[in-house]
Image 1 (cartoon, rainbow, N blue to C red):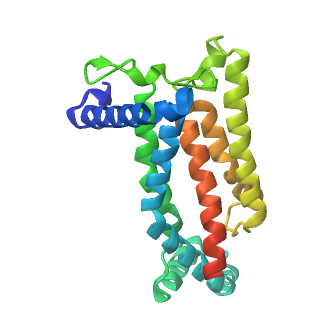
Image 2: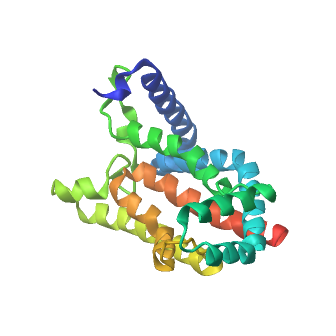
Length: 237
Protein backbone atom coordinates (compact mmCIF):
# COMPACT_ATOMS: atom_id res chain seq x y z
CA UNK A 1 0.00 0.00 0.00
CA UNK A 2 1.31 3.43 -0.97
CA UNK A 3 0.77 5.65 2.08
CA UNK A 4 1.01 8.77 -0.12
CA UNK A 5 -2.47 7.91 -1.44
CA UNK A 6 -3.96 8.32 2.03
CA UNK A 7 -6.06 11.51 2.15
CA UNK A 8 -4.01 13.23 4.86
CA UNK A 9 -0.63 12.42 3.29
CA UNK A 10 -1.86 13.24 -0.21
CA UNK A 11 -3.13 16.62 0.98
CA UNK A 12 0.18 17.42 2.70
CA UNK A 13 2.11 16.50 -0.45
CA UNK A 14 -0.20 18.60 -2.58
CA UNK A 15 0.16 21.62 -0.30
CA UNK A 16 3.94 21.20 -0.22
CA UNK A 17 4.11 20.93 -4.00
CA UNK A 18 1.88 23.96 -4.57
CA UNK A 19 3.78 26.03 -2.03
CA UNK A 20 7.16 25.23 -3.60
CA UNK A 21 5.82 25.92 -7.08
CA UNK A 22 4.40 29.28 -5.99
CA UNK A 23 7.70 30.27 -4.36
CA UNK A 24 9.63 29.07 -7.41
CA UNK A 25 7.45 31.17 -9.72
CA UNK A 26 8.00 34.18 -7.47
CA UNK A 27 11.80 33.75 -7.58
CA UNK A 28 12.14 32.90 -11.28
CA UNK A 29 12.23 36.49 -12.61
CA UNK A 30 15.27 37.22 -10.40
CA UNK A 31 17.06 33.89 -10.14
CA UNK A 32 16.14 32.05 -13.37
CA UNK A 33 17.03 28.35 -13.38
CA UNK A 34 18.15 28.49 -9.74
CA UNK A 35 14.63 29.35 -8.54
CA UNK A 36 13.66 25.80 -7.57
CA UNK A 37 16.77 25.20 -5.47
CA UNK A 38 16.58 28.65 -3.87
CA UNK A 39 12.94 28.03 -2.97
CA UNK A 40 14.07 25.00 -0.97
CA UNK A 41 16.82 27.05 0.69
CA UNK A 42 14.28 29.71 1.71
CA UNK A 43 11.89 27.08 3.08
CA UNK A 44 14.76 25.60 5.09
CA UNK A 45 15.67 28.99 6.53
CA UNK A 46 12.06 29.61 7.54
CA UNK A 47 11.85 26.20 9.21
CA UNK A 48 15.12 26.68 11.07
CA UNK A 49 14.07 30.17 12.18
CA UNK A 50 11.00 28.71 13.84
CA UNK A 51 13.26 26.17 15.58
CA UNK A 52 15.50 28.78 17.23
CA UNK A 53 13.79 28.26 20.64
CA UNK A 54 14.51 24.53 20.34
CA UNK A 55 18.13 25.37 19.48
CA UNK A 56 18.40 27.55 22.57
CA UNK A 57 16.97 24.74 24.70
CA UNK A 58 19.50 22.38 23.14
CA UNK A 59 22.39 24.77 23.94
CA UNK A 60 21.26 25.09 27.55
CA UNK A 61 20.94 21.31 27.84
CA UNK A 62 24.41 20.82 26.35
CA UNK A 63 25.82 23.29 28.85
CA UNK A 64 24.10 21.49 31.72
CA UNK A 65 25.33 18.08 30.53
CA UNK A 66 28.90 19.38 30.39
CA UNK A 67 28.49 20.68 33.94
CA UNK A 68 27.21 17.28 35.06
CA UNK A 69 29.88 15.32 33.17
CA UNK A 70 32.13 14.70 36.23
CA UNK A 71 29.20 13.37 38.27
CA UNK A 72 28.05 11.24 35.34
CA UNK A 73 31.51 9.72 34.96
CA UNK A 74 31.50 8.97 38.68
CA UNK A 75 28.19 7.12 38.29
CA UNK A 76 29.55 5.21 35.30
CA UNK A 77 32.59 4.12 37.30
CA UNK A 78 30.53 3.11 40.32
CA UNK A 79 27.93 1.09 38.38
CA UNK A 80 29.93 -0.08 35.39
CA UNK A 81 28.94 -3.70 35.98
CA UNK A 82 25.22 -3.01 36.36
CA UNK A 83 23.82 -1.40 33.20
CA UNK A 84 20.28 -1.16 34.56
CA UNK A 85 21.44 0.60 37.72
CA UNK A 86 23.74 2.81 35.65
CA UNK A 87 20.89 3.95 33.43
CA UNK A 88 18.58 4.51 36.40
CA UNK A 89 21.13 6.56 38.33
CA UNK A 90 22.03 8.62 35.25
CA UNK A 91 18.39 9.47 34.56
CA UNK A 92 17.91 10.32 38.23
CA UNK A 93 20.86 12.73 37.99
CA UNK A 94 19.30 14.45 34.98
CA UNK A 95 15.91 14.68 36.70
CA UNK A 96 17.39 16.11 39.88
CA UNK A 97 19.10 18.84 37.85
CA UNK A 98 16.05 19.38 35.60
CA UNK A 99 18.04 18.50 32.49
CA UNK A 100 16.53 16.66 29.55
CA UNK A 101 18.94 14.18 27.91
CA UNK A 102 16.79 14.31 24.77
CA UNK A 103 16.80 18.07 24.18
CA UNK A 104 19.43 17.75 21.44
CA UNK A 105 17.13 15.39 19.50
CA UNK A 106 14.21 17.84 19.30
CA UNK A 107 15.33 19.84 16.22
CA UNK A 108 16.07 16.60 14.34
CA UNK A 109 12.70 15.07 15.23
CA UNK A 110 10.83 18.19 14.13
CA UNK A 111 12.66 18.37 10.82
CA UNK A 112 12.25 14.69 9.95
CA UNK A 113 8.69 15.07 8.57
CA UNK A 114 9.77 18.08 6.49
CA UNK A 115 12.64 16.16 4.90
CA UNK A 116 10.18 13.32 4.30
CA UNK A 117 7.78 15.64 2.47
CA UNK A 118 10.58 17.08 0.33
CA UNK A 119 11.72 13.55 -0.46
CA UNK A 120 8.22 12.48 -1.44
CA UNK A 121 7.27 15.44 -3.64
CA UNK A 122 10.39 14.93 -5.75
CA UNK A 123 10.00 11.19 -6.39
CA UNK A 124 6.38 11.04 -7.57
CA UNK A 125 5.43 11.73 -11.17
CA UNK A 126 1.95 12.82 -10.06
CA UNK A 127 0.61 14.31 -6.83
CA UNK A 128 -3.06 14.43 -5.86
CA UNK A 129 -4.05 13.38 -9.37
CA UNK A 130 -2.07 16.00 -11.32
CA UNK A 131 1.36 16.00 -12.95
CA UNK A 132 4.22 16.90 -10.63
CA UNK A 133 5.62 20.12 -12.12
CA UNK A 134 8.39 20.22 -9.54
CA UNK A 135 10.22 17.48 -11.43
CA UNK A 136 11.01 20.00 -14.17
CA UNK A 137 13.10 22.09 -11.75
CA UNK A 138 16.88 21.69 -11.98
CA UNK A 139 20.12 22.81 -10.35
CA UNK A 140 22.93 23.40 -12.84
CA UNK A 141 21.16 21.11 -15.28
CA UNK A 142 20.49 18.26 -12.82
CA UNK A 143 16.81 17.61 -12.00
CA UNK A 144 16.01 18.20 -8.34
CA UNK A 145 14.35 14.79 -8.25
CA UNK A 146 17.62 12.99 -9.06
CA UNK A 147 19.37 10.93 -6.39
CA UNK A 148 22.98 9.90 -6.88
CA UNK A 149 22.39 6.29 -5.84
CA UNK A 150 19.46 5.85 -8.22
CA UNK A 151 21.35 7.50 -11.07
CA UNK A 152 24.35 5.22 -10.53
CA UNK A 153 22.33 2.01 -10.23
CA UNK A 154 20.28 2.81 -13.35
CA UNK A 155 23.27 3.95 -15.39
CA UNK A 156 21.94 7.48 -15.86
CA UNK A 157 24.62 9.28 -13.82
CA UNK A 158 26.17 11.74 -16.26
CA UNK A 159 29.12 14.07 -15.43
CA UNK A 160 26.75 16.86 -14.37
CA UNK A 161 25.03 14.54 -11.88
CA UNK A 162 28.35 13.43 -10.41
CA UNK A 163 29.60 17.00 -10.21
CA UNK A 164 26.54 18.66 -8.68
CA UNK A 165 25.47 15.96 -6.23
CA UNK A 166 29.08 14.99 -5.50
CA UNK A 167 29.94 18.58 -4.57
CA UNK A 168 26.78 18.77 -2.44
CA UNK A 169 27.74 15.61 -0.53
CA UNK A 170 31.31 16.86 -0.05
CA UNK A 171 30.02 20.21 1.19
CA UNK A 172 27.81 18.49 3.77
CA UNK A 173 30.76 16.34 4.85
CA UNK A 174 32.95 19.45 5.14
CA UNK A 175 30.42 21.12 7.42
CA UNK A 176 30.34 17.91 9.47
CA UNK A 177 34.12 17.95 9.81
CA UNK A 178 34.13 21.61 10.86
CA UNK A 179 31.44 20.82 13.42
CA UNK A 180 33.44 17.84 14.71
CA UNK A 181 36.55 19.96 15.16
CA UNK A 182 34.74 22.94 16.68
CA UNK A 183 32.62 21.01 19.17
CA UNK A 184 33.84 18.21 21.36
CA UNK A 185 31.93 14.96 20.97
CA UNK A 186 30.51 14.00 24.35
CA UNK A 187 31.33 10.38 25.34
CA UNK A 188 28.44 7.93 25.69
CA UNK A 189 28.76 4.81 27.80
CA UNK A 190 29.21 1.73 25.62
CA UNK A 191 29.67 3.65 22.35
CA UNK A 192 33.20 4.08 20.92
CA UNK A 193 34.18 7.72 20.53
CA UNK A 194 35.11 7.07 16.91
CA UNK A 195 31.54 6.00 16.17
CA UNK A 196 30.17 9.17 17.73
CA UNK A 197 32.55 11.26 15.65
CA UNK A 198 31.52 9.43 12.48
CA UNK A 199 27.89 10.31 13.15
CA UNK A 200 28.77 13.90 12.21
CA UNK A 201 28.99 12.64 8.62
CA UNK A 202 25.73 10.67 8.63
CA UNK A 203 23.91 13.51 6.86
CA UNK A 204 26.39 13.35 3.98
CA UNK A 205 25.65 9.64 3.60
CA UNK A 206 21.91 10.33 3.59
CA UNK A 207 22.41 12.90 0.80
CA UNK A 208 23.62 10.10 -1.49
CA UNK A 209 20.28 8.31 -1.22
CA UNK A 210 17.74 11.17 -1.32
CA UNK A 211 16.74 13.44 -4.22
CA UNK A 212 18.91 16.48 -4.91
CA UNK A 213 16.14 18.70 -3.51
CA UNK A 214 16.34 16.99 -0.12
CA UNK A 215 20.14 17.23 -0.32
CA UNK A 216 19.87 21.01 -0.75
CA UNK A 217 17.70 21.10 2.36
CA UNK A 218 20.24 19.01 4.29
CA UNK A 219 23.18 21.21 3.29
CA UNK A 220 21.30 24.35 4.29
CA UNK A 221 20.17 22.94 7.63
CA UNK A 222 23.59 21.57 8.70
CA UNK A 223 25.18 24.92 7.81
CA UNK A 224 22.53 26.73 9.84
CA UNK A 225 23.08 24.33 12.73
CA UNK A 226 26.83 24.97 12.76
CA UNK A 227 26.38 28.75 12.67
CA UNK A 228 23.70 28.61 15.37
CA UNK A 229 25.88 26.47 17.64
CA UNK A 230 28.79 28.91 17.25
CA UNK A 231 26.55 31.85 18.21
CA UNK A 232 24.89 30.04 21.12
CA UNK A 233 28.24 28.83 22.43
CA UNK A 234 29.32 32.45 22.71
CA UNK A 235 26.13 33.21 24.62
CA UNK A 236 25.90 30.14 26.86
CA UNK A 237 29.50 28.98 26.96
